[in-house]
Structures are given as structure tokens and as C-alpha cells.
Length: 588
Image (cartoon, rainbow, N blue to C red):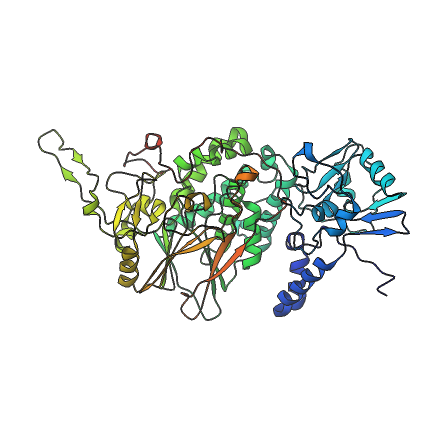
């Protein structure tokens, strides 16, 4: 009865909500290998649903409610109530209604809420849509000679937090959204993690990001549970060698390689769902930079550690340059931890630094693919001794460009990775090279003057390394859209990956998995890049499939933990005075 039954769209008829709140998993469970097909068809149908209805010319209905004029920006002062004519012209065929840009009306209609305060304002609690007051209701009703606005969107769980409003919105289901319990996460008896425990941790962190201030994270993740998780993970990581070998593969195996995620928890959760959660046949190699810049670096790192503990031979966590004392003190992670854990913050931060030191530096996948955060590295320079003085002090020479020679995997295996900050001078330069180096279109090896640490290497070095070890791919990360903007001759990071070198033996790829990066940036300055990940499959796991994705929206409102307007960019020269370069630095 198409002219008797009318189905309008709600905010949960979207890719984001269905991936977070169960519908996607429900479909995949019910339809097995046909589940993705069924789910995609449902998403397509969601896009076709109308946004609103007018009943008998007297009643307006929509899931969320009212909306702004089409030309309105997100700034409060420019907000103005939209018209039915503009609603008729809005583009509704979107998987997820945009929270910024020129097509804001669908997001407003599906996500907005009424308020007792006059006027229109942005809906900060939801991160998308509007709040509108009684004056806006009167204006809309009067303009179109309506008597009623009927909307839905808020159940008892939403209304119990809304001052001045009673539950008069229609909510026709007795089902109440099952939120993670407010009880703190507990460490399982015996210390053995389960799939359910890890998924519960992810849900708890996602929920707390929306509902709790940062300082209340211990009410979700007590310090005692943090200690148990990071101790267990650190023990596993310390046993791994500098190069993690991903070899236990068969014809059904899939390896997902992930680049920088930088504390963007919601994008990581989407990536895990989109790529498929780790399993017996689903491997993950994370290429470092889990923390800094984003607002949820600690939660991001702990989610990944929990997967590592659950599946230590299926999930591999490599170190990035931001897993260091220097970077975390500059780009927000230290302040984030201190804010979230208060008087226990220094303890939590020290434990994280100790765990960073345990992270392997690189991986070899199926004997065909080398991955590392920055990339290639030099052969160590032998120290020269000075004459005379007591104790014959060693003078460590900074190598001349002409003396730089490509390092070997054997040398990488022997490097001392257990340092808070990889040295930029001395005899232990390999960790700094692996974490900080960048590719170049110029041949040979040269010091990375722009960063102040690491190397630049050319296509000839890529070919030499691939050929020597019979590899097909080098996959590295380390450069987002801000870094690539300044790199002559190399591609931008608009779609989350670039192929930097194509040589006779194979390819060099840069992969970056943090979309819309950096998270905190003025709207007009945003890069709006996509994130991406790589899928490697049989027969030889060296034919990369790329999957690009947009940033998850809406996301919770958050404040930066670093001075993003004034701090140096991640690709500018390192402040070497801030580094502890003592080579005898003790490991925590």
C-alpha cells in the first residue's frame, strides 16, 4: 500500500549508526557469506527514504525536527531557520548525512533536538544537527499554517539528560538502547582475554567519548585494569624481535596493513569493522603512530593492546615516531593522559612510555613485504677513538653523506630499540632511521635535514633493498596530508595512500589511516583527506588492495591536548635540545 504507508528516514538509517549499534552485525550474522550483499542493499534503501511528511496540510513530521537554511554555515551567529522549499531540494541520497559542508539539511532533519532556550544553536552534545527553541517552533508553525510538529529521535535514555524537557516526543518502541554499563571494566579472572571482553572495551570507550568528560575515564578504565593490560601486553611485545615475521599464512588468510591513526578512536573502530576484526584468518599489522594530535590516543592505544593480548600471533603493533617521549610531550599524548588520570597520570604515562620501548620496529609479511613506520635505514657507522686522554673517550662521528650506506635486515635485528627517544646522533641510529626517514625522488641516501633525524632515500635504494631480500613491496606510513603538502615530486595524501617508487623489483607505498587529519584544524584549513588501509591476500601477499574511507561523522566534541595553532608541524625540524641523547639511557 504505497499510498497508505509512508516510511521516513531516521538517524539510525545510516552507515555510521548501523555499524556502531548492531544492525550491520545482525545482518552479517543472519546471512553469513551473503551478509555484506544484504547489508549494502539495506544501505541503498536507507538513502531512498524521504526525510519528512506533511499530513493534511496541518502536521509536519520528521525524525529529528527542524533545520537551517541551505546557505548557513555552522557558526552560531549565522544560523537561520530553513524553509520547506529548501528541504524539498536537499540531497538526501547520502550514506551518512554530512555534519559540515553545504548539504547540512539532511543531518539537521535527522539529528536535531528541541530546546527550552530561544533561537537556533549547534547541537554540541550530538556533534551534528541543531537545537531549536520555542520561538523557532512558533515561527515554523505560523509560516506554514501548521498546528503540530511531531518528531521522534529521543528515548528515555536521551531525555533523562535534557534539562527542562519532559518526555513528550513520540518513541514507539519498548526497546531501550543497550549502552555499555557504567560499571568499570574489570580484568578477567585468570587474566585471559576473550573476544567479548575486547569488544566490550571498545564499546565502553566509544560510549565514554560521547558521554563523559576526559577526567572521568578512570570510572570506565580503572588504573588497576590499565596496569594489568599494559603489563600483559608489554611482556608479549618484549619477547618479539625487532622484525616481526608474519608467516603463519594460508590460502584463506588476509593481512590488513594500517598506517597512522593518531588518537582518532572512532575512525579506528570503523576501520576494524570495515576491514574485519582480527581472527584466525585475519591478520593486522599496525605501522605505528597510535597517539598524539587526536583526542583519544590513550583509548586508541589500549584498544590495540587488547587485540594484541587476545591474538598475539595475529595482531602486530609496530612503533611509530610518535611512540616516544619527545613527540608525546609535544603533540598532546602526555597532557591527555595527565588530564584523564589526574594524580595517577604520571604513573599511566610512564607505563605507556615503557610499552612504547617494547614495540618492534618493522615486519616482514610472507617473506615478500617489508613494513616500517618511516622506512629504510643506514648501516651503522663505527666509532673512532681520540688519542691521549684518560679513559680514551669515544668520539662518535656524524656520518658524511658520501659515507652513508643502506643498512641490512641483520643490522636492523641487532639494533637497540629500547630507548625512550630514538637517538639522532651516535652509534644507535637505526631506530631513528626506521621511525623518521622519508622517501625522495633523488637517488641515494642523504640526511633528512627537514626533520633533523633519519634519512631521505631514493628509488635506487628502494630497488636495492627489494632486490637484495627478494621483496615485492615496502609499505611505510609517517606522512599525512600536512607533511606531503611540502614534499616536491611526491604525491599528496588525499585518498590515504600513495605509490612513491615503482622500480623493477616492486613498489614503495605510503599508507595513512587517519582521515580528516589533523583532527583539530580550522574549517577553512582542513585537508579533508581520506584514510586508507591495505589488504594483502594469497597467493603471495604482495598484490596490494587499497581501501579508502571518510572520517566518521558525527564525532564527539573534544578539545585538543596540544597547542595545535602554534606547535611546530610534525614534519618540521626536531627540537634536538628537547631530546635526551644519552646512549646509556635506562629503559623503564
